[in-house]
Image 1 (cartoon, protein in one colour):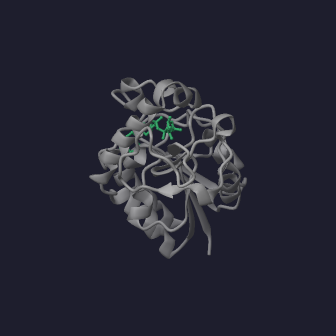
Image 2 (cartoon, protein in one colour):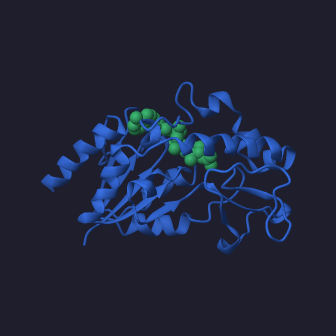
Image 3 (cartoon, protein in one colour):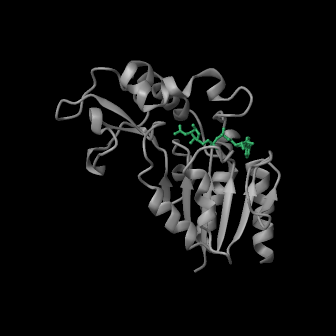
Length: 234
Ligand code: OAD
């Protein structure tokens, strides 16, 4: 079976009602990422950081996948699909995608904090809290304060290697709804094989350095329909 790697960003969830980060009126217009989503922010004011992700969990609880998530999941009928998402929501899984790499973590999960060694953790420590609130004073079974299972700014991206491998093995790389501003995620498409076809679905200009990339300049839901018809012609 041929392989597709789908790299998604906030734009794929925009039509579900979740705001993007960098568009006008986006999350980073309202909140300072260095305060609510960075390693430094966590050290300075963990209560504020927990509240920011409590708010995101609450919003996600009443959000549904859209047809772009569903179309990406349906690709699995004919293709071996790896979804590599920068999103911390669970909309790809809820749409039925079975192989999702969360580069920047998952908002429905937490893990014990580790002080100076914050980035090292074992998957077995990760706790699924669903859509519940997590507050200062909420601790792991071993009595350690819980932190969001999110890759904060200033932390490394543990799933990068698996993601790069999936891109390098893909016959088609599809990029949906990401401004490609955040590294290392933004460099992933460069791991594509020279024979791979690369498509982007985004209504805006995206800074890619490859003239062979086909840009479907559209929203995720209608752009996915165009992509599916192009796929039918390959
Ligand atoms: P951005 O907010 O940077 O970019 C969103 C992209 O989605 C832009 O290119 C928009 O043009 C596009 N877009 C908007 N509406 C769309 C729609 N309906 N359909 C398709 N595309 C649409 O979000 P990301 O690139 O995902 O990290 O941001 C990357 C990372 O920065 C996030 O994972 C997050 C953030 O800081 C962390 O929190 C660690």
